[in-house]
Length: 395
Image 1 (cartoon, rainbow, N blue to C red):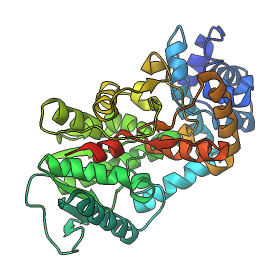
Image 2 (image 1 turned 180 degrees about the vertical axis):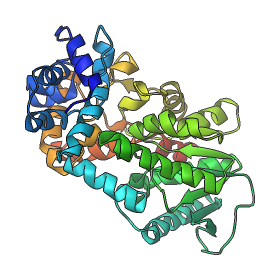
Image 3 (image 1 turned 180 degrees about the horizontal axis):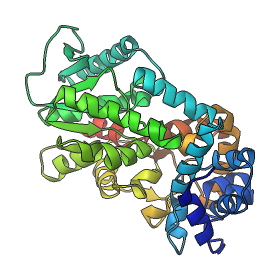
Image 4 (image 1 turned 90 degrees about the vertical axis):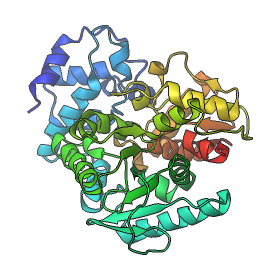
């Protein structure tokens, strides 16, 4: 049932155990079968689909194991292939399957209609104008036609324009991030276009199957072709960025940037001025997994921006590649996994001496996961991304 690559990796495993104690899934459950070494052992002994599903559905696909393995074995990639094989015979993780279905139908994880997305974006644009005293020009794209976001008038962008892919969480939960994307692009001289057909950064197909991953990737490419922007700007989403730079960006000639890359470049060149902002201290920065271990790391940029905005901040680990998963990746942000995530962070709280008042983790999934986990733990800590702070600081 399982493809060749997982068998090759499982046969290559030396059972040294380096991957066990550092695996988020093992840390959360304490079960060896929920570690990279344990998962490879299940493949080696030909475990039944039910047992494979139970174990591999708990993998966050954070890639931490690949950097601790002396052979560089990437069990996250094994998980992706095993999950695809399991899905073909009816063993798909329900939450992941639902999110993929939402995206393929509506272009966003939540399953909101274009009308609802449009209303939320209009509110964000009006609020940005009120807070900054400067009106960013935002246009909504749908089926080849443009509408000015606030007025609803059928009008095309006048200046050079950027196609922005925010996260659906940024639209409906972390709206300060959406305002940050829009306002930074406005200050850099761009009109902003948001596709009502694909207003999301995520690609949960990565967690389900190659076919669904590429279907979602093609949805991005179709919108890029229709809009023909000067550049594509990607919001704060870890796994979405990993997939985007792996299979979307190489297929388009349009320059593509993460919002951190674009903002950092503008700041270091003196094009964008950032002022210090007051935040509750201590401030802790945490790398999302796919920024520190993904296809195109985003490590230097968020730290430089954070330094400019808040000054000194603490780091949880010495090397970014050692960053610890929020336990929301791989679909583990599913509501039924909340208690497991709470147990995991309770253990980390003791190990990492978490006492931060402001936790900066610039990924939509991470923010959503940490917000609800910290709330369940009774921790008084504000969870934010980098771009929300940039929005407060940009002048």
